[in-house]
Image (cartoon, rainbow, N blue to C red; front, side, top):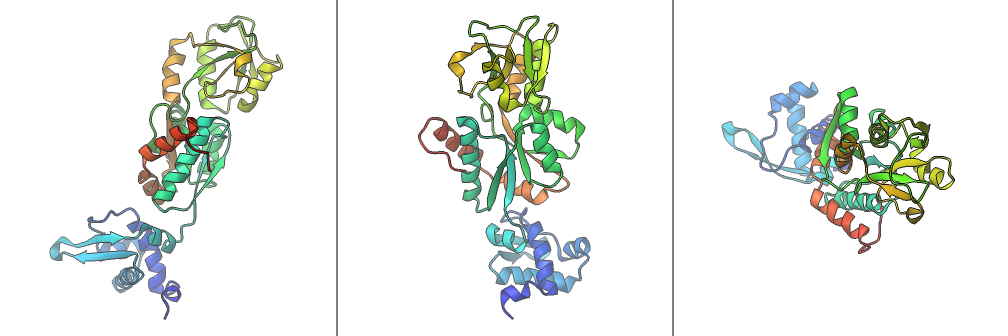
Length: 310
């Protein structure tokens, strides 16, 4: 019987489940005992043994028995295990790539997944709340949000888990306040200030900066903030420094609120989050990604040394 046909036998179906578990075992580590696999998967010992032999015959793994010490994984082909496990593409979701930094981040993620031979697709969605809702509904395998947004959402969603931190400056260079009046640098009483309640970062920074001021908070889609400023429909808005559209026509100023300045540092870091209940296999693959590679590619795109590709 051909190896592919054998995947539909009892041993083959067991091999699929065992392949999922072996994705998280590193070469040189001991694999679970036959009895452990049998108990966890409700399989007979003979079926487990047959499944492991099938995985070896397919070139997905090589095992080494060390007597009473157990059986160790001496080699594995992650791509083969991934396919045998029935996994398709990993799908991530990140902010809309409106800046060079986000284009670089998207390109870096694509490159890093390519290097570990994991099929990967990337989707884009505005607002950390929307991205995490979509993650936990099962539409995506992981989401890219700021470190601040991840910490805030974790307080309300215990299943959310940060798998990878990409370091300061990986999400945004920072935030500042943009003004419709080119000569303005500070939010004042009576101003109309744009706020997007679906963006944890923008919402919190705006709230702290406006605390104690008599301003009108105008609910605005994050992606429309600069257009609203340009049209004079709002007077001020907290926005990403990396955004260059119309940059020369606006007034700009730093945060006066100490709390806003502190939070701005947390906002600068990109993190990858998963739903722990659904993402154990994906979590392992994300852990294998090279942060250095992602950041190097991101910087190359930002500096114009390579084209964005995602």
